[in-house]
Amino acid sequence: MTQANNSSNVIIKDVALFWAKLDKPVSPFGVDQYELQIQGDKKREKEFSQFGKVKVVEGGKISVNLKKKAFKKDGTDAAKVRVVDSGKKELDPTLIGNGSIGNVMVYCSPYEIKLPNGKVSKSGISTMLIAVQVTDLVRYERKSENFVDFDVEGASVDTDQSEEAMF
Image (cartoon, rainbow, N blue to C red; front, side):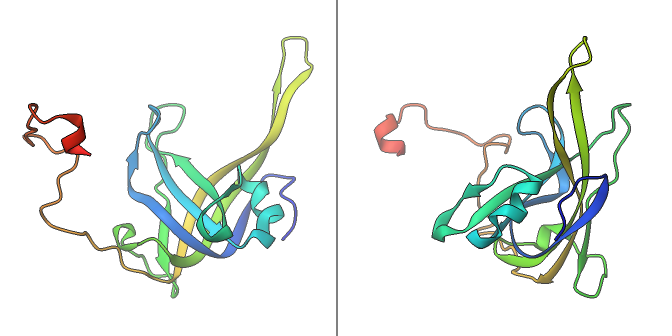
């Protein structure tokens, strides 16, 4: 793996896939985007650090969160993250469960933020999720068809319950 110094596509091989939100954009902080967390062994920390902030997760593994904005600067739709199986055939992204194994393609591009006087105040490498190849699928399965989410309209809440009773 070479350091991503110039704009280029980079493939991160043999990573565990978690929290795949690739079928439709999510908006955690007001920006519509596709998201995926990759995990690997701690010995890959230097490699992973090229692509974002490395965090330690359960079991001594490390992770990096990858994303792609759903809209271009001009407001038009950006291309979705491509999701394929080991034979490079299109795969429904809703099937990807936590712990699936695969390869991830990201686009890396250096950037600089300059002050009005021309001095560079910040520089780094921007990483954008491009494609996911699932080589060992762990199928995502809903726990229950009766699952109620906060987004479900019409779900009633007993407001007379105390907080202690709810938790």
